[in-house]
Image (cartoon, rainbow, N blue to C red; front, side, top):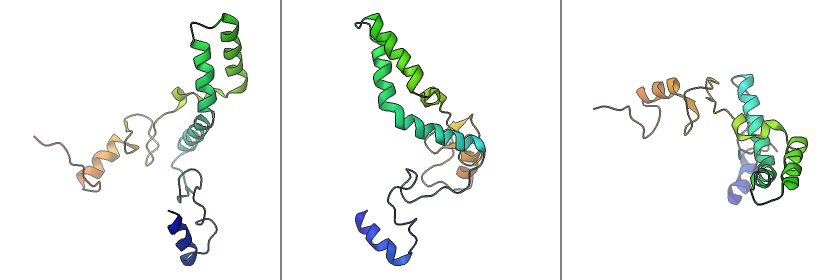
Length: 133
């Protein structure tokens, strides 16, 4: 990857492409979103990643049966006050990146079942075939 970064400026002098980690996706830049829900979901995923360690530690303290009740209450209070509610994993909805559909999404490819079937039917996905028996 480092060798590629040295070669990239020769072909394109844009400072945008010379960065190794742009928006957390390597060399990709997302300019257009399908809908506001995809943007909201992406923002929540970013927040969940930022607060994951702290949230995990505080939740473990809160749910621990051995610790005194005062410490558990302090951990619960700190979760409520310092960590945004939207960083919880249950707030994340797997959305289709093509249609922004929130239900019926195949998480491995991040597309809805309708789009997945269409792409598979027309041989647009390598290594995937429609079931035949």
